[in-house]
Length: 69
Image (cartoon, rainbow, N blue to C red):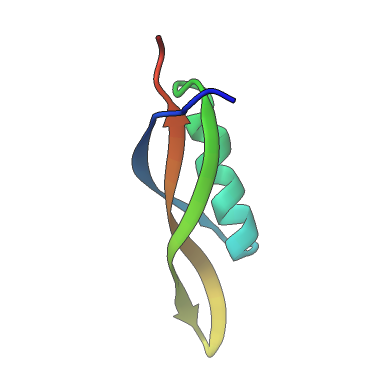
């Protein structure tokens, strides 16, 4: 088993649907330009309230990726 070195970045995704969708949106967008993503960790979840209901979700995540050789 080889050792792995990871770098991580922090992203915030948003969605009107759910916190899971906000997380997916952040990862899928990052995948367009970041190679080697391996894991994510939810750091913060927050939302926007309108008329007594959740109107929007924001999720901040750390995403770890392997470095190129």
